[in-house]
Length: 322
Image (cartoon, rainbow, N blue to C red; front, side):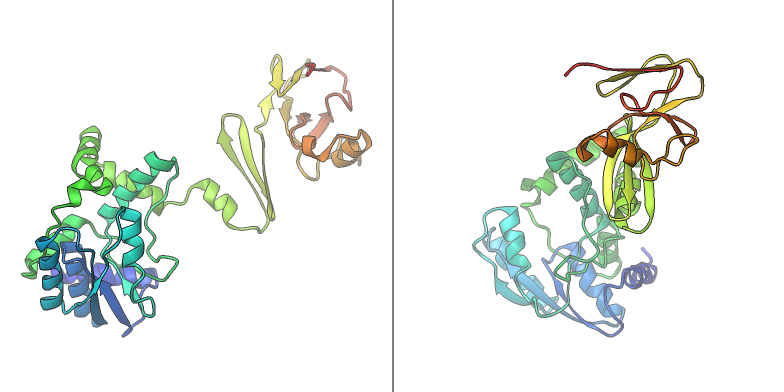
């Protein structure tokens, strides 16, 4: 382990994500484990004014007492009473309730990130990870480094650290001990590929990120997400009109080749005419709620038929009864 290089990488992440200003004071929330011990040492070596705080949950009797003693005696931590929580969520809320009047940092790593991604995927079906900075201002300078690297750093710097014997009883411990080893057997780059889910924003996230201008995204399965300034909706992806096409309750066919069926877009006009499709819908008394799912038959960008409203030679459209 090249300790100096490790510190430089951490400093690069701090600067890139604007976590700590030069010379700023920061309080490390320390457990005594390798990650928080590494964090405390690295930030001191980088020249930040570092203090430390240990929240004692008192869950493991003498072992918890020894953790608190290590944090106080070795890391110079103030020790506060964090008893009272029963679930992991309750304990987390207690930990983050202290020292809210100052900048705080935790030792979360890329390894924690992988475990969090997996848990949120299976528990909610949503991709979500740990943020470099929490909404309450807590920062995670080690989020770009792995747990193995923090342990190597501690060994290289001669830093003793505590090991929490209860880790295997937690949800994160289950993922770490049983699920990740199986995923590595499936593919050796499993963890790196999971991390990409948070490093690379999804196209849908990019579509939703800004209300400026317009953007379209093919979601697959015949759906397209559309954003026009601050409005977002889903519409069917254009389908080549070859043979008979089903579009909701409509069955559409045409003799002419090269036509497509798609949903209405703002600004659409009838082919060769100045009349807007929006006006066609208004005159036909089509409710606003139905317009975006109504099929249009198009040639390029020109609308040649609006099934049930505007007919075109060679285009047949029939709506199934409700």
